[in-house]
Image (cartoon, rainbow, N blue to C red; front, side, top):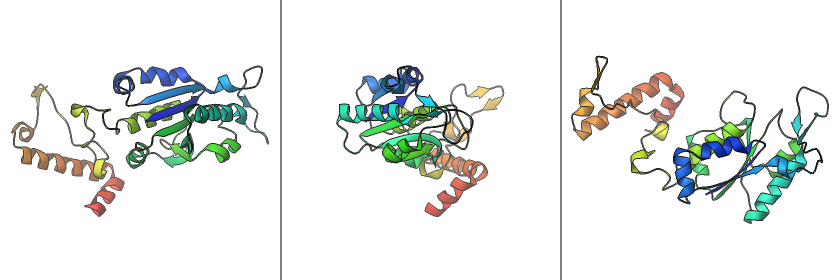
Length: 232
């Protein structure tokens, strides 16, 4: 997979990608992430990328030319015919594991990080195929949401996670929250690891995990519990 990120703050993206699982996936050639500074493509002699909104209002709006020029550069450089362009926006549909799975099958994704009060609507009309939000709150820019997408999508690509990092039993798989996890020591501050998961009896361990997942989901996420019951 190749992910192209359009942003005003490339170092935010690059610093995260230089660590842990993402770094390993990039070094192993499983994932390619190219980061483009929108400001590098502005035709404004003062390198401005924003302006006051027509009709008045607080804040500034990102102008269309630098974004569109960045986009054109990306698709021409990589010979992308039908680009999937995702604008990270609080107005978008809320991101979830199902969407992550869908996007993980893509070969090319372009992420557009907005800033200030947003971007000129004409850019959304011209190039954006998806608007995605990571939750019902507002951030100062699209860089953190972009990293959330990159992380959650790429870890579903075969080879990104090793055998000990499998996502198969994680939270949101099959609409269940993940069961509790324990490790050494066996006793910590008088709290013991449940006997059943020390038993070595795989069927009993699996039964315990399912029961715990179901109980947690029913209490904490009734919306997921409803979906789980419907699909069971």
